[in-house]
Image 1 (cartoon, rainbow, N blue to C red):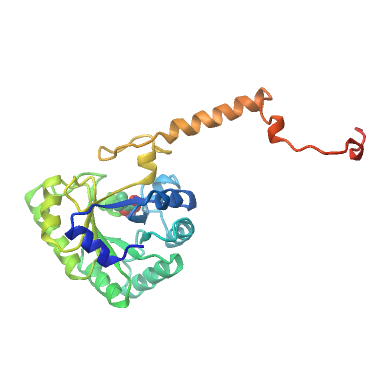
Image 2 (cartoon, rainbow, N blue to C red):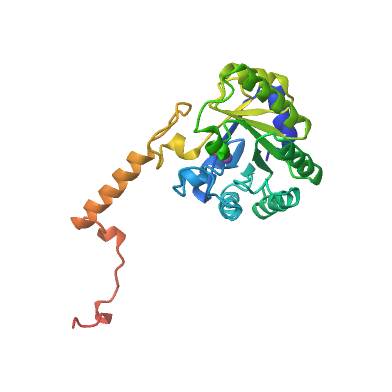
Length: 276
Ligand code: KIV
Ligand code: NA
């Protein structure tokens, strides 16, 4: 399994870091068996596997429940678990307790928080000091979707771009081990990547980040109807899944399934009771 020093070496060597989300045992197995560098148990699970329209309804217990399933499927892959909405904003003590629960109960390698407010920076530092690696997340931070006014590209004006670069430096200084950059212009992501020592992992942030992350269900086209511009689909589980279930339905209706090869037989007919 990689560790946080390996991730920095990968940045230094320009060896791209690959990351994908996973929310359960089978997706985690796919990711680990394919040789992914890092897995993210994202709070996007609220949208892609629980069907909510944003991530704000996800709870700490949801992250732990899914995180544990992921770890059973990918015990040997560096795994980051998201802290969900409002689980790290009430008080420093509550935030530390929630982070410790998520980290310990899922046996993760890091947790992830969105933003770079003074409170978040202190939290990043305190967690790092306590031995919990923190991945930061800037740009489009989906837990703030209701404040940002939608899932929109961030850092498009001069003030915002400057702020993002400053925030990236601050999370680095406070001990973050990596930085997710979501939905920002490619040129800005390159400047940020070249300005900090920790690896950047982009989603909708262009090719110049140190690594890339995508949502498992997006790259599979699995249950999602509309893909964001920044996703490249590598499969079509929607079609594969519908076709398989349709074929099953018609086989059952036509009595093509179960065939004898799927059935059990007795050796001695005499043990059978009479039909009544
Ligand atoms: O929850 C998630 O999937 C994420 C990624 C989009 C980075 O935070
Ligand atoms: Na997330």
